[in-house]
Amino acid sequence: MEWGAQGGEQTIGPTSSNDSIHATMFKRAVANWLNTRGMNLDDRGHRGWARRFYRCSTLIDPGYSSPWYNLGLLAKYSSQWDDSLRFNRKAVEVNPKNEEAWWNLGIAATALHNWNEARRAWKAYGAELEDGDGEVRIPVVRGCVRLNPRGDGEVVWGIRLDPARTVLLSVPLPESGHRFHDIVLNDGAPNGTRVDSNGREIPVFDELSVWEKSKYSTYQAHIQIPDSGLIDSLVGLCDRHELGIEDWSTVRFICKKCSEGSPGSHEHERDPDESRKTLAFGAKNYDSLMMVLTEWAAKNDGIELGHVELLLDAAKNAPNGSAEN
Image 1 (tube, rainbow, N blue to C red):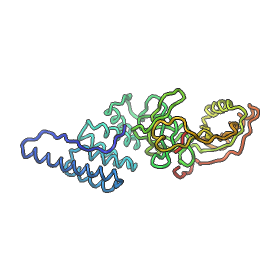
Image 2: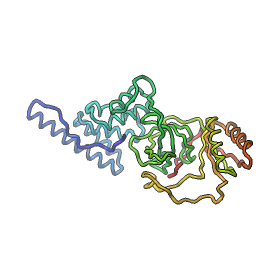
Image 3: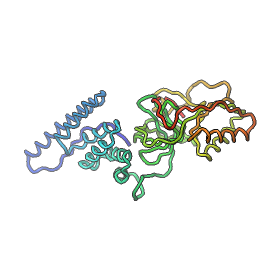
């Protein structure tokens, strides 16, 4: 889970005299004011100034957990994972009940491949994980991720590997700069939902960064198909050969408000020729894709394979590019 900036924490440990109590309370009041001021600045987009106020708050009262967490939050959204880990670790050190900091500590540790620390953080938060060393994994479960959430977000499907990572099963649009089988680091707060083929609502999590780039390139082909049922056989063939496939003829472009909610049906233009499909593929090379397409076309009459175009090479990046797969 992920929460916003923290403020208002007033827990103060026991002291030995009235003077000490008053001094401690005064320090906490000043630190709280600085922390709140930092939050207000952060809300207005002044992250540099917010960071300065949070740092001043920690100097005034090092035992105040919230500004440490807020520094970790800023570091997280800047993908400064060493700093995020350090600040969130300090936040839980001074307040072990700070659940938000435990969660963000888990994300930072995952980003850094620090599996022992990630496992410690998830367990402290309350996640049920098996004991052991090495990479953290959870039982296989489908999930949705919004790629490039601060730009033109694209919601895609994948498999969640652990609380902070998702491997992409959709073939994203090339404008997103993402590919089939990329592993992305995802935030913890659901930001909308989508409905799967079984009618279940699946939460959508915003992407933080690419954790591991895949070796798959993105290809596009315009194909004439006499029977839409033949798509199923192509999907099965792609699965057997470990290729990604996506029907881009069904992509929906929707508004940000609907994307971050639970969009129902949306009016969108449809190709009047239902037999003409724009299919996207994730493949490691052109030859492996053409072998599958040629085999599929040879077994089914009436299929016309159009030009197969490379849109995003696995060895290159693309600019950031809301869409629904």
